[in-house]
Image (cartoon, rainbow, N blue to C red):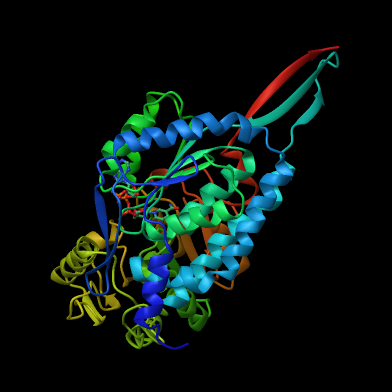
Length: 490
Ligand code: NAP
């Protein structure tokens, strides 16, 4: 693949509508304010988009609310076919969408393409699920009555998505909501609104009726969303982002007793036992740590390695991580892009400096990359002490702290020693150990001998402070359906 030219970059930016998408119309923000979108690789402004106000957000909710009844009555087959057409359009436009995503978020083009493929699988999966919404009919235990259950869409939904996977975190909410017959207001993160605006254009082209999907971009997420969350016309809030913001939103959502899904932060342990294939574990670690420059809720945050293989694992991981090509994501062969913004890089640098000040050693990396962009060198830390802050906090950067353990019980206890519970990774060839450890882990997901779990056909989600609710798979559409039970007297 060759480097993308400035004129190709400009062309994809020019194609994106920059307004708010409300009731099937593209409009400016009330008052005409705009918000700049930054390229994190060089801090230039890529473009300006509408900076929506609370009034704009309320107009979006009105559109969603007014469309809800007609959309719920839309034939499921047609809802599925709209998703299928969008799936095909996204496939055709993967190259352009990938450039757009890389420009606003920083990830290398190959990773942007991988995200688009993953994001699009939610549309394919839920295009198929739209026609499989059903209920059941049963005989009451007394034998006298009958029980009927039926499903209906929960109603207008509010979606708030983060910047790290600008498309996939949207499609895994939008796909099942469309399939279930819900309308929605989506607020993407201000760092990465362009991918979501491009997605809205594609859904419009695929025939999604006006008012089903509404997108509001804004620099003031709190004041924009609070009135919608407390509005009785909203029925569901699905949030992907930090645990701290998720907690705030849950409090707000209690006012209207909204149905809530929370996909929050992680602190994934990566366990390698002495019977594991170390090369396979290093391969898994590269994926679990370096995908998205470590800016993933599923990113391995702590490497707990059996002391018998810890040196070998650390050396091999450091060799692989140290050899990665860093650069602007659109560059030829680039494997590591910049972090999303200055705040994110400050956090990562602070956590590494803290670990080193407490006794850890940077085997590779450990500093910023000089230059205008928010680059941080991929880093492996050995000898990390138990009091290092990065064992407790989500690093959200390309930093791999390695800690060794002696016994299986100690490894599981260390893995569970966190308030988070999204995902864990386990490498072992011993089947009995694998099942014992998997059962003992307090997480919503486990990667067993593999460094990635994301799959549109599977239920993604966490426990503890990583939230609740599941996205993807058969479970994902249930988040958008209410069950009505009918007691029948024969
Ligand atoms: P964040 O600061 O919580 O922001 C997430 C979204 O919430 C953004 O759209 C943000 O908008 C919005 N937001 C912030 N404050 C808000 C408020 N008071 N009211 C309404 N909306 C508000 O998280 P982030 O830094 O973007 O994303 C990283 C976090 O997401 C990490 O913790 C990561 O683990 C988590 N994550 C979890 C999953 C999962 O599935 N479990 C997946 C991906 C990411 P603005 O940014 O525009 O203010």
